[in-house]
Amino acid sequence: MKTEKIGKVLINYDNYKGSDAYNEGDDVEERILEVLKTGQNITEALLQDSRWPILYQLSPRRECIIEPMDIRKSDNVLEIGAGMGAVTGAIAKRCNSVECIELSKRRSLANAYRNQGYDNIQIVVGNFQDITFQHQYDVITLIGVLEYAQSYIRTENPYQDFLKKIYGLLKEGGRLYIAIENKLGLKYFAGCMEDHIGIPFAGIEGYSEKDRARTFTKSELTALILDAGFCSTYYYYPFPDYKLPREIFSDDFLPNESFVPELQNYDMDKISVFNERKAYQSLSGLEEIKTLSNSFLVEAIRES
Image 1 (cartoon, rainbow, N blue to C red):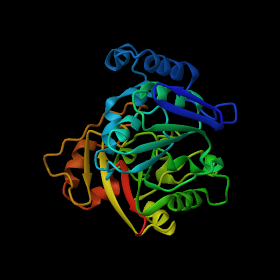
Image 2 (image 1 turned 90 degrees about the horizontal axis):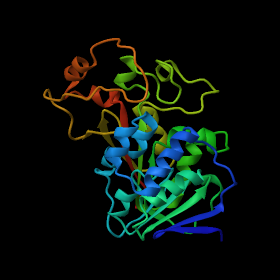
Image 3 (image 1 turned 45 degrees about the horizontal axis):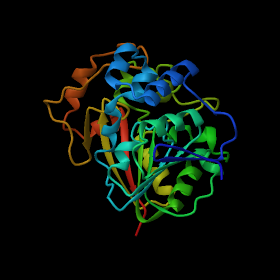
Image 4 (image 1 turned 135 degrees about the horizontal axis):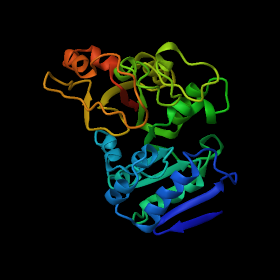
């Protein structure tokens, strides 16, 4: 077994192919790794360099997305696509163990340095499809991962097959949490670029076969989940999105007329098509806001 230990965190390289399959730029990722490896103050690091990939990987607001998740102290959690560990530590605080799957060695090292004080984290470097799992899990998370399934699941129906395999890895009564952009998010109608393609209205107008990622409407996502065998779904609505959530609403708790959304778009320029704030306020309390939420956090249950 090829392993490395950083602090209390064990990294397993048995499924690592020797090169990282993707990155957000060597200079950016090396900078993030340096910050985490040397224990620099995150706030000071962001004041020095707040480029979007660095803000996304280092912002403490990333952890807010796990707040609604039903994670219990006895749970064993599988975090698929753990990245640089932005939410790994927050999960570890609430459960028995976290097993992280991550394609990139550099990102896995960043995760380990970031969370080296936890003795219940193990990181497996490699493609999810190539890994042999030894047991089932109480909770599985896909945070910003499902949209890329076609790039890493080598089948004719990658999204369906990905979710079906995950279903088999959950214990009876286990919970899957998916955080993903909404293809029909109001911000995309208002002129924001599609997050993965960088073109306005790309998701709304329909993805092409060459696009490396794709997101879904609420009904499409629900159908994918139920077709994989899950018995139920429950939706949360993070605002402004799941990446840097400030508020999280749910099927049972929608924003009211006092809701003032954060509209800053951190990653790309946007075209201003209409007054987005007024649009949100006109939808407050209405069922339609569920369809037009910028992102979803979905809880899917495997039947007991």
